[in-house]
Length: 330
Image (cartoon, rainbow, N blue to C red; front, top):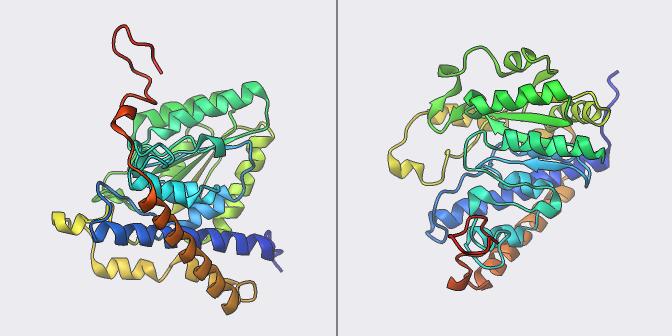
């Protein structure tokens, strides 16, 4: 008999996180479709188990670096949907005062060092963060998310090499959703992500990213290693995004995967999978309340964002590090 490594309370917490992410992202997609939101929006629909399984294992002293598809990561570590939505609306009360937008959202007070529009760029930042944690001996660790496209970035392997040499408390999580924009991973990835990491002597494993319990178990092992000073771990989460790389891509004429493929993967919806796996923990009344609360939270966030003022022009040169000659840097 297999002894469960999770409790009913923990399962329900992961379920709530996934539902909150799904409700937020579906609303964001709808706002974009109806012309309320502008710019690029990359939703996390279908990948919720990765954020819920990994980030549910962290403590207040830990940190996270994210990707351009980072809304789910911030929600999973306790981000406030009101400030997130205000940021997407470009409003003054957004997390970055409306200047970061969807792909640069951050909350350093929560340990979220930021989403990043540059592919793979969060990985070396995470290694720097983990180095500071190791030097300070504060017991913290850093989790770095990147995608299958990021797995071909040289900076990722330079950072992984340093983390391995110095045995830094960092966990590298590759969310392999099979596509880098429109490019299929199997056409550009030689070997496997796990075998590449093993070449650096870093413990690595590949798990079903639609199974939040499997993701959580892998994260627990990696967190334990990091806190015990045993160095980094690489976790490849095999997942799938149910929506496009970016909202509105259909209008650009992008056709790179079949409807049959998408529908086949939707049979492995991580939220429905958990409902079916542990129905005794997630009865119908609990699921209904969870969804109702999540939708209400999202609607409140939209109302908050719409009521927020736009940043005044006088803030244009605030919160920046660069300066003109003779100016004091802020």
